[in-house]
Amino acid sequence: MSRIRMAGAAVAGLALTLALTACGADSDPLADDDSGSSSSTVTIGSANFAESELLAEIYAQALEAKKVTVKRTFNIGARELYLKALQDGSIDLLPEYNGALLSALQTGGAPEGVSSPEDVLAALKKVLPTGTEVLEQAAAEDKDTLTVTQETATKHNLKTIDDLKPVAGQLVIGAGPEWAERYQGLKGLEAVYGVKFKEFKPLDAGGPLTMKALVDGNIQVGNIFSTDSGITTNKLVVLEDPKNLYLAENIIPLIRSEANNPTVSGALNAVSAKLTTENLTTYLAKVQVDKQDTASVAKAFLTENGLA
Figure 1 (cartoon, rainbow, N blue to C red):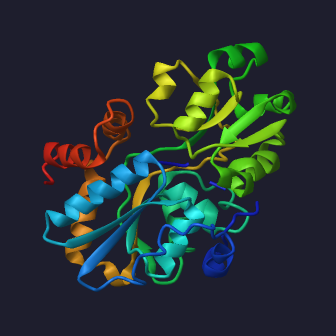
Figure 2: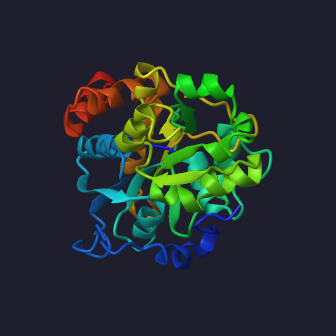
């Protein structure tokens, strides 16, 4: 849960710590945690949306099945916050999205021509913050999308993000608050497509607030994650991205190097090998639509894939 991707990212390569410190919030979800993690415990974090928390719980239970002691620090917030937590040692591990992470770490967004999973991964490894690494990426992919209702698509003849340019000044877009400053948000849409909206409504990161606002007509364009089952159930239209603002978004574990070892990497790589876009969408719907708790859905995924 995306993302998700972002000339003028909120973070820049190895200078990440200073850039992210400026993005702090009044309420720090990590304030009560010990600084750093013991060598025998892996502290797992997540972003503040359902898919990220589900993936983090899958990672946690996969590690616990290998007798690794795990501490959960979920629902931290947006990338700007959880990367800071990773760098200062408050967490050791979290699920990420290769293209979104690359765009966040690379000044000016991803290098031109980089869009495939393999190219994104190679470019990402060059800009990871010191002391961190990524493990094997999954085939599962969840991309940021610009999504509209069928009514809006028909009214304005919208099929691609390019088609928004002549009409965006009449439309309101909704997304997570951080989208206002992300390259894979408003900044990249203007830089790559020349699209400027009438208004930006800060809602949530591809979550229920954005979906409801879109379906209710309070916004006309929403940043919805591609694995959201609401796209199908609400008969929404995902606009094509011909200029590849949104890169490959394969799910990948991001970990502090000091927390990694063969047991940890073995368990997490086994999870990545089983994750597909299709099964992720199915299990995420159990959380978002069926309202099952994240722990039981994660357990079902691991059991059904022989990882429990």
